[in-house]
Image (cartoon, rainbow, N blue to C red; front, top):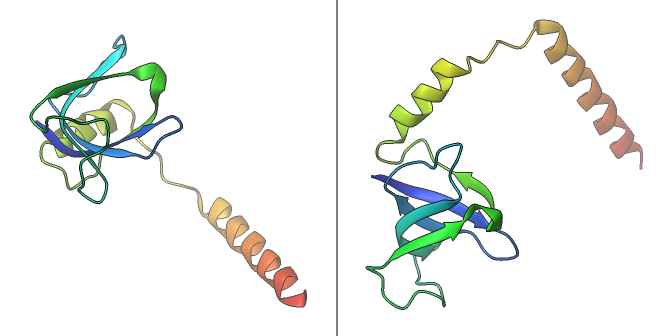
Length: 110
């Protein structure tokens, strides 16, 4: 069970849910339970807090899995092994800092 997952639904506020498992590449629905708003309240569409909900992926803009959720460290670790992230080069960091300083200087002149 993955707890504390935030599902961002199109044209609606995000909801906090518990997932049994992450949806696969061929999934069309997300199966979840314990649906609540981000501040912990019951959304208007939830009549029984013990129900299981199916959200079609067509309505989901984003699935946010916080690193502090139970069981997510394993899922995140698997993705990191599959898609290793490269370290940014020092030239790119120096360029970004110069661009930020130039932007801040122009803002201060206004």
